[in-house]
Image (tube, rainbow, N blue to C red; front, top):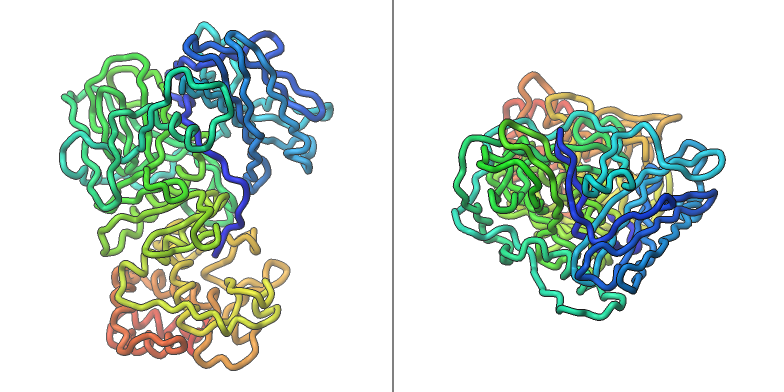
Amino acid sequence: MTASASSGVEGSEGSLGASVPCRPRVEPPVEVSGPERLTADTSNLRLRVGLRDSSSSALRVSAMVLSGATHSKVLVSPSWLAGSGSEATLSLPIDSLAPSASVGDRVTVAFEVTSDAGAAWSNALQLERGAAGWVAAQGTPRFDAVPADKRAEALPVGIPAGVPPLAPSPGAPAAPGALGSAGPGVEVEAVPAGRAATPAPRSAVAARQRLADRAAPRVEMGAAAAQEVYPLASSTTLCFQQMVLMNGEGVGEDYLNADAMYGSAGMWVSVSGVWGGYLSSSGCTPPLNLTSGSRSITAYTQVSLNSRVARVDTNDDGAAVAFTWNANVTAGGTQTVGFWPLFKQEQFNVSMFAAIALWYNPGTWTGTHHFHALNTVQCGGGSCNSGGEVYIGTNGGFDKFLVGHEHGHLFFDKNTAVAWWGDYSDDTHAPPCNAGGSTGHDVDSREFSSTTFNEAAASFYGAATFNSTGQDDCAFYHPRYPNGIDCENGQAWPDYDLPLSFMELRCPTPWAGRGVEVDWLRALWDVRTDGASPPSLNTVLAWIDLAPAAFTRDNAYTNLDAAANTAGGVLNTNWDAAKGPNGVDH
């Protein structure tokens, strides 16, 4: 699977966060000023901003609009607002950014203001299309990311009402690694004093984003991230949640099935001056010794669960992504701290998707799962598994099944001894066998069987990450099947033309040595989930490695059938029951 490329968004270090029950307290470099601080008409949102940071002489304002079910992103060209003490108005043409909006539809406008001294502030607002134009949305939880004495003039932040966190089930904290002072790598570059108030290149913007954690040296991939050591006392436990925005959620899957706040399972978090390390599988710190008040907190796109590590960088830059905000905490007890990683949404999404995968399906390989979000270079700027690492194209970080599929390629590469095939030369068929046409692989295109098995195994891993394998039902989002592919049962009109044994019903012969991904996906799901005591994922991996011969492009079925006979037991029983009805016995 690949994701279409579009304009990228450079991330920002934010000051957006919430502590329950306390409100956050931050000192942004700007203030939203005057009674006309926010106005909207039939086509524009206007935001008035003024300098607050006395060390700054200019501000850089940029904005992003998330709209529609696919969270399409539009980056408004950033601009510099020069002059100490100046005020300026940022005008966003909302109608042109959400042209198909109807009355009642909502968009989220995220914006960041960066001073030339390096400070940054991020915030967001939900707008609703009314009969007379755009207005601030009502009926959603809000908090104000400005100091208490400014809250009367604050721009509210709209966070969608969330379901209870659906983080992985609580369990033992992940192994922290060797003790020391290093955190997950964040490249730090100093911003020269008195820099000119001119538009900054992306590299300079990135440098300012990374100022928050000066003490964290870079840690290369493969090196164990170390726990930061501070004196601890059993007093306060902080449990973190993060906003996750997705495309194609809610088609029938079990985990991460709505845009909401979810527990930051296994994430590396630094609480300034108190603690730094991996959170537990329930997203919590150990008990900390801290006093009440404002704390600078930094979360990283590096997670550790089941003694496996996943690390997400931006476009192969090698550094875990950091998001910093201030939150008020109260000493004693357990409290929840929430954050919304504005302008770094995709990187943190991918980190969450990887965390769920490592919790439910860790496999046997214990190396680092390395992801490159916002990829514009490898695999044509789209999404792929290449060189044992996962590349996710821009906007692909909103699609958990796309990430799960590419992660699945990495997973089977690392957890089996198979040389996986990628010969797509048999993909020459017109609809309905390959409804996408005859120009490339898709979930419904006929391929050589070993290639099909490769693709289906990757999709199976994504399905098994976000669907409970303790149940028979299974749903899998696909951009061409936006209501979800049923990976347990066949689908007929008027839903989708994806019946069981799709190849036999929709594709021309020859069938020998061929297959279709959706057929093999359903067969693998049946092998993994059928019966009162279905085989584990590790048993499935062992079955694949029992194949008596090297995989050629067209012997996947005969090889796996022989391996199942050798494995015996419930795996062989499930395979024998699945191979015929799903039409993979060719």
